[in-house]
Image (cartoon, rainbow, N blue to C red; front, side, top):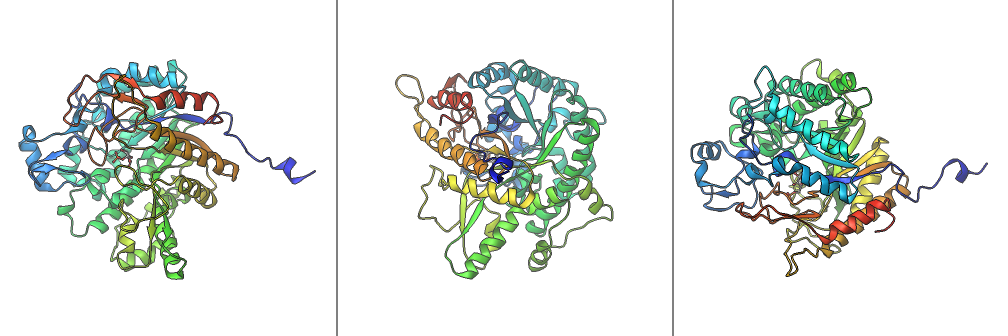
Length: 492
Ligand code: BGP
């Protein structure tokens, strides 16, 4: 027997590869005050922020206690685009039908915690909220679309921020566990694929968005980010355990925003920094996939004066709640070098060092399809667990042409390169089982709260002020992706 007969080279996407798109409740649903829903942290993330600056805020990842107080007292003075989304709440049938037309066999969406527990503290869940997702999952089932559900995607009850300052408080662990058990139980016959927390590593970047924490109320934001993350690790592990009890064939994943860090030069110190930056990026799946804190973090915590609170049972909880797969969002790579602030920059979206080989998006995000291949190879080497690309895509300002279409060849180009990179990674031996394009229908941008930063295959007629008919128009990329899916990734 020859080696090649035992180990086959994978030159194609696997037969049952999951193709689809990804969204988050707070960026699409709207109907922010319907059917008993409570207010979430994302309902309090403003686009136009008259209190802080009087001008359009281009980055809404952090909110201070003063801003929150102002928004609560003067909601009429600002814009909260995540309250209106794209009204998926009332258009889900039409939208899912369009996804089906493209051939999706998976749709990633999140459940809005505040539809289920409006303040997080109720003893019983809100039936109307639960019923909404039943309808959504049933609609998916009609077309053979597998839902992949994120339990917590950048939103949580604002009451938990006000009462506990979010995830820095250990009380959140049990509160979340209860929410997780309720949704697992309710949807056990409808949902098999789960992600516990979206991009947990972004806590380092966006304490409010990721962990519901008002950073001005903590002494040391970095310490708070790791403390909040520790509580989310526990909550995630408990949710994994609950999923195994409730849904025997459930697949539960963790997720990070993977930003690969290249060394600026071949200087050994720069190379070392790249190793360290990448370790920090993978710290989250290290804990969630291996079930324990990695040894390198001890020195990092000591260097950064971080000392988080743990309890005796925590190590066992983490060990027993290891995930089944690792999901990533992938948008860009970074460049790093040996410098004082390198550790801080490792967790940040913005890198001050440019990569001369890469073009940028309209929002200055470096476009690097090979970086996706590198990420997949490294993550598989590290965990030998199945991988899922839960987000990837191009945010761009689409313009409606005179024939009322969107000719988004730039998006097709971007996706073509990245899907080819996934295919190459599969040929490199990596086990990737699905790919969902971020914002498969135009939605409210997470970081900027703008509508005009569009990712979709489907255009939604709405502007940054929330004006428009909400009409859905398939873009050129819609027909292209349909062809990609129909050919199982052969026809790019
Ligand atoms: C990820 C988030 C998404 C999302 C995407 C694009 O970090 O999980 O919610 O929106 O990034 O980011 P943005 O909307 O800021 O362009």
